[in-house]
Length: 601
Image 1 (cartoon, rainbow, N blue to C red):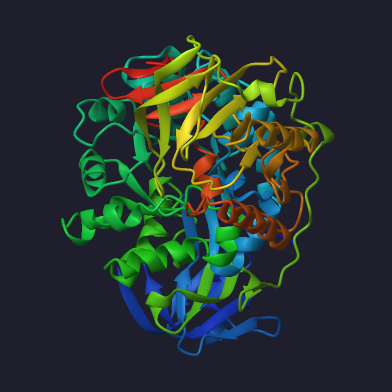
Image 2: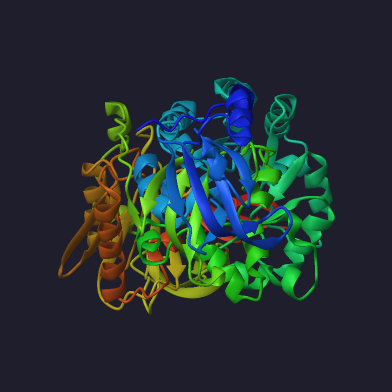
C-alpha cells in the first residue's frame, strides 16, 4: 500500500472538483461529532470527504461526492478528530524501528510526530539520521525529522560518542527535504547562553534554512538566562517539570512541551499552568519524549497522554488541541496536519464512547484506513538496515571483575564519596556525599548502594569510569548492563557484584547491543542490534522482551517505575545534578555550569 503525501499545490484541482461534486471522493465519513480543534467546538452531524490523501470537504452533507468507488464510513455518532501528533519523541527510546513504532502507535490514534533521532546520531552521526528518515518515509505517519543538535551532548571533553555533528552537518541535513523540519533539542544550553560557536552556528544554520529550534533548558524557571536562551531563537522546550517552567516559557513566546513518558511524569504538575493559573493553552503541547515498547503496549502513546491530561482537569477539546493543532502550529505545518479542515492531510481518527476516554476505533492516515479496533489493517514493508549498523559495539576488551574495583587513595578507614541518587519518575538526579569505608585500598560499596560504570564502546579506546549510585534497590547480587545510555550510548553497567557486572557487560558486548540483567538465578537478555538501541523484532516481541527486563529488575529489588528508562539516563551528561560518562563523574549546576568532578571529595 502506498502512503504518498503530495503537496497541497499538486492536489488543488482534484480537491476543488471533489468539493463541487464533479469528482467522486475516494473516502467519506458521515454522521459524526466533529472535534473542531480550530474553533474549540464539538459539532454534531458532520461529515468529511477525502480525495486521495487530503480532505476535500467538511460539512453536513457530502452525498453529492459519493460515487461508485467511494468508500463510505458511517460514523454513527462517533467522534471524528484529527490524528494525534507527538511534539517531541525519540523513536529509538521505544526500542523499535520506525516501521514497528508506526505499527504500535497508529492503532492508538497517533498519525504523526516530530522525531529527534539524536540517539542513533550519537552512534552513527548523519548517516544514522538519514537511515531513520528513509524508513519514516515508507510509513503512513506524517513524520518529521529533527536534526540532532548535541552530538556529543556535552562536548568531547566530557564523553566519547561515535560521531560528531556541527553547523555544516546541520545545514546539509536540511537539504534532504522539507520533512527535515527543525534543530533537535539543544541540550547544551550553557553553550548557547555563553556564546559557544558550535551551538550558535547550528542555530544560525537552522534559522537560515527557515526551520525552527527546539530547546532543553534545565536551570530554574526564574533564572535570568532563560530569556538569553530564547534570544538565540529557541522557541520550544520539553524540560518543563513545574507550572512555573511552563509559565515563564509561554510568557517568552516559547512553546512549552509537557511530557508524560514511561518514567517522566511531568504533566500533572505542568498542566496546572493552564488549569490553576489560567494561562492560554495555545502554546502548550503534550509530548511523550521517551516511551518504551513495554509502556506503548501497556499504557498507550499520545492517546494515553491526552487521556491523562483530561484526568488532570483539562477540557477534552483543549487536550486534543494540545496534541494536534498546537503542535502543528509550533512547527509551521498547520496547513497540512493537526486539524480536520479542507485541504489538510486526511489524518483522521474515530473515537467511541466519551471523548475523555480517548478510545480510538479507527485510524485513517494519508487518506487510507490503516487500523481498526486496535489492530493494524495496513501492511507495512520492512526496512533493512546495513550490516555496519548491526555491529556497533567496539570495546577494547571484554571486562573482568577487577575492572569494577574502585581503588582508594588510602589503605583503610573511610572517604567522603560523591554518590548519584536516582529519583523515581524524574530525569534529574541528586548528588549525595557519603562517608564510605575503605579496606585494603578498595572502596567498599554496600548497604544498599551499587556501583555504576561506563565503558567506551565506539572507538575501542578503553576509557572507563566507575562510581557509586543510590536508589537502585537490589536486595540480592545483581547487575544490569545496557548499550542504551543516553546520549553517548556507551556501555552502562550497574550492580552490587563486580563479577556479575563483568558478565552483564560482556553479554551485551558479545550480542552487539542490548540489555542484560544477571542475577544468581539466571540471565535476561534483550537484544538491540540496530546501533545498540533498537530491536530487529516485531513490536509485540520487543515489548515482551522489554517487560522481561523490567520483571528481572523488579524481582531483584529494583522497583523503580519503568526502571530501565530511568537507569538509561544516568549517563546523560547535561541533566542536573550528577552523572557519569566514560570520562568520569559530571556535575551540572546553575552556579557552576558543567564540569568533571572527582569521586572522592
